Length: 285
Image 1 (cartoon, rainbow, N blue to C red):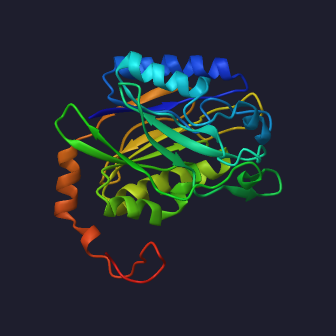
Image 2: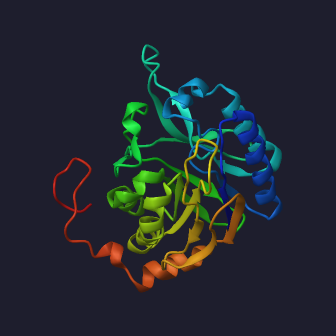
C-alpha cells in the first residue's frame, strides 16, 4: 500500500491552511497514495493556544470537516485529518476542546475519530506549554480497517504527537492486530531534535509495525519553530522516506509481507512476561 505523510508549516489563516493542505493532498493522490496523513493542527497554528477555540467545530459539521469530506471524495483518497478542534459534548464549556483526528474514506464518510489522550506540558524556562489549559483529554484508543489495492486488510491505529512517549498505547494496538500506526504531530524544535526519530523508531521496532508520522516543520507565523522530519518507518525500524523541513508529501510503499515476515522471524510480541491489563491488573491477555 502506498501512503503519504503530509508536512506543513501552518499559520493563522484557516483558509490558507486548507488551500495548502488541498494542494499537498492532491500531490499525494497523484503520486499513487491510497492513504494520506495530515499533521497535527494542519488547519490552524494560531498566535496563542486559545485561538483554536474560535474555529472549533461540532462533530459532523463545519468547514474543516467539510473540506476533509470533499477532498477525500474528490481525490478517491483515505485521509487521516491530522487534528482539528472538536467541541465538547458539554456545550456549557466553551473554553476547552478535544484535539481530534478524523478519518475519511474515499466515499467521504467519517470512519474513525480519535481524541488525543496524553496532553503535552513542557517548561524549560524559555518555552512553556500546557495543553490541558485548552484541551480535554480523550479516553479511548481508536483503530480503523483499510482494504487496500494490494488485497490486504490493514488495521490502522491512531495517536497524536505527545502520545508517542507512552508505549503502552502502541502495544495495545499491536495486541489488537494493528499493522500501521499514525502519528500526526507538531513537535517543538528542541524536543524534536533530541527525541522525535528515536521515539518513532522505537514504537515501530517494539511493536514490529509500520509507523507513519506527519509533522509541522518550519518557522510559523506565530514565531514558533517545529521540528518537521515527517517520516515513514518499517517494522524493522528502518526509515523508508523522510522530509526534514518545509512543506511536502513523504511517500512510500508499505509491504504487508514485510510485517508478516518480521513478526514471524522475531516473535517478540509473543514473549511478553511483565504487562498490565487495561484495568491496571497484572497479566497478559
